[in-house]
Amino acid sequence: MPPIRVLIADDHAVLRAGLRMLLEAQNDMQVAGETGDGSEVSQKARELKPDVVLLDLSMPGPPSGEVIREVLQACPNTRVLILTMHDDVAYLASALAAGAAGYVVKKVADSELLLAIRAVHAGRTFVDLTQTLRPPSRPFAERSGAERPPKELSRREREVLRLLARGQSKKQIARALVIAPGTVHTHTVHIYEKLGVSTRAGVALFAMEHGLLRA
Image (cartoon, rainbow, N blue to C red; front, side, top):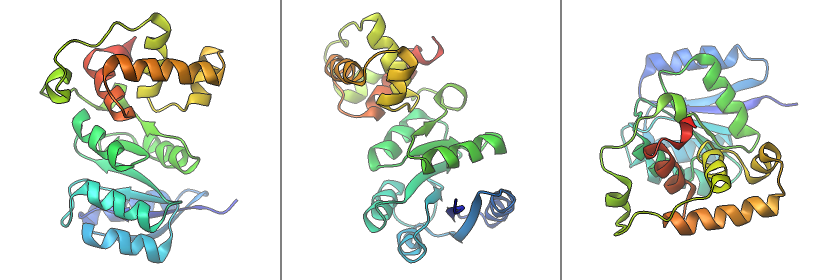
């Protein structure tokens, strides 16, 4: 198997150097390149065609959401993994909405970051909500504009929601709950309707704010 080629995008040179050492010490990873300017990320991705872009949210240049979308447009097969100091779930929602495949805060252990890189490269979504993120300051209903509380979820819907918010795919959820993938899809549709959301980011926000990830 060829190594996972990673483009490091962070404006702190010391951190980039540390990440390079960490990644190149792995038998299954290779640093394809690095940049400290958000305006260069999509061009670097186009030139280097990395498997994973390890992206800081607070770099000089365009807004991070724009950078994510530009990378994915330039390299549809590249996965974007956010590595950031921001531990507010609102940043997570914004990153996922833009197309990021994973979200890790900089205080996690090295082993967790390596796990995240391997997970997104394998086509999975990686978000360690339970350990690293805190709820945003504004309530879910205020941000979403909802006038009434969401409809009550069934026990099974809460189980599916919890796994969706943790980044599990529908096939993974089906295996975990020992139900058919079609049943997971039906529950997901009902969850979105009851919460009044249309994205996995909205599901993650709701789950985080209502303590469902600890259940």
